[in-house]
Image 1 (cartoon, rainbow, N blue to C red):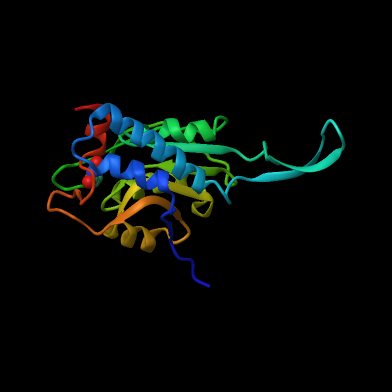
Image 2 (cartoon, rainbow, N blue to C red):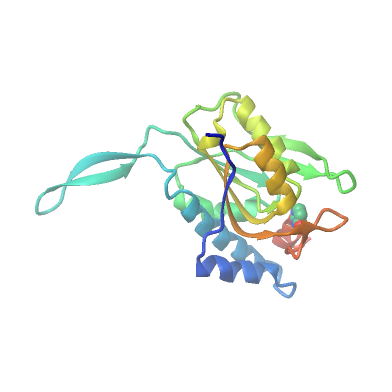
Length: 216
Ligand code: URA
């Protein structure tokens, strides 16, 4: 059976609440950062549900021995925030994945051509093909930035089927392009917005996530 991109919009009231706060033009930068942390936390919580590898074991309680499930310490856990805006989601994700390795990617979109280019790449030369990789990129507009990041990860041995993307807004053009290029991928988003304006911004969107996170 052919693989198909999976896109989940978790129906969680906290995700809806913090999405509304982040969209509101009146939300000041400090509160916008809180919204990003909370969206990072709750979307990561949903994204790792059936993704974190576990091992079955036994534990001794004060009363008896009983079966138990632990996170498998032998499978590498990786988080890749895409700078700048992906940094806003990192704190929330890291509270749930405190042992994950964090590899930063700095990618900027040319404002006219919308083409992505790298200004920072902290990925190691090789990634364990079993690594679980969580990518943080709040705004999937054309999908160009995420595509550039995924190509770097795949070149280093990562398996798209073991990746999860956490974003806040996914626009239809990005989902169309990603489904053609990476059908094994799974995306968790707070919502799906329909389109882009002539400058490549998501509409209704939330504006420039990097500027609003960093008050620029
Ligand atoms: N990046 C943003 O920060 N906002 C958009 O609407 C699109 C890309």
